[in-house]
Length: 130
Image 1: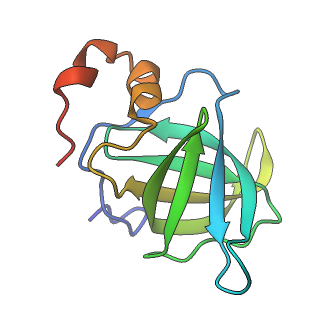
Image 2: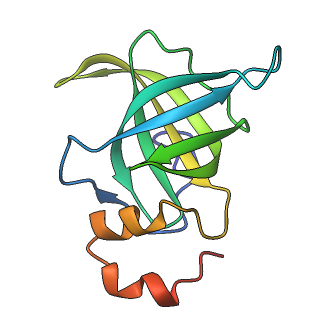
């Protein structure tokens, strides 16, 4: 447990996502009505092969720890589980909502994008998530 933030450390090494322009979509499925989805644009702050830190717009409701959501990166979907979330005053972005997520799928469809961001493209074929 990381006592400075009160959260668990990641299983994989964190690496900042070099290109800040990488955006993803967080899909928050609504329980009422037919298959309605609310899409929230997010910025991937850092990533590892097991999870990521996402920055949501300041007016987004922070997802609760333990919630299962869908993350879309470069058109590919994958299941994620929220580990923590909080409001943050970012020096560069201003007030935001930041959350840490773990990838719930053993091989999420967006894994090639994550590997490219981590400069680990050669390992895609041999990767085992957990």
